[in-house]
Image (cartoon, rainbow, N blue to C red):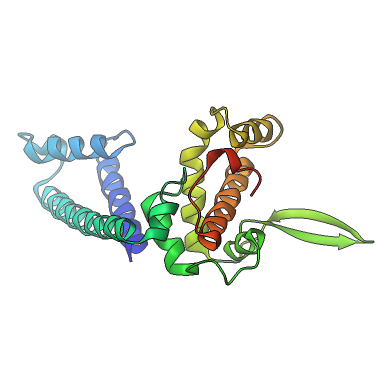
Length: 220
């Protein structure tokens, strides 16, 4: 439900930008820039060249935007309460790149992780491992599969992308592993590899009921 609300908000803001662009108003990327542009159109003496009917439509769209914001924030607060009250989600939320949203989604989807016999099985279920083709007994890794839990996969990749810069600078085994990957692979591939690693860490923590330990990350 939260993902649907976020998609609706994104579509709405894109439509607002398009309406402004059609009237010669180019808005830089970012929420604040768009809000400032709407305020200038609404409060300007002549609407910054925007007709009165379009100004009313933009005001209505801004009200919809704020309503979506409130609903998303309410769900985020609910997820935060769930993470505080659930021991498993609270542990997972301490993993860099996981956070409250991913932690609660993982616990809701896989429980204690005992459905999977190993961390790689969870990564495969999520769609975070490469497809394989075997010819003459020699396996060849292909692209990342599009199967699996698309929602969880997307969340983990977003979390990994946000955490990658800071994790790659750490003097931990994970930081060393990431720096090595970055030196020989495209950044997007490293993000997916990190997302897969984080999923395996989450599985191990759920299965063994252990706490997060940075120095043991690469061994998982």
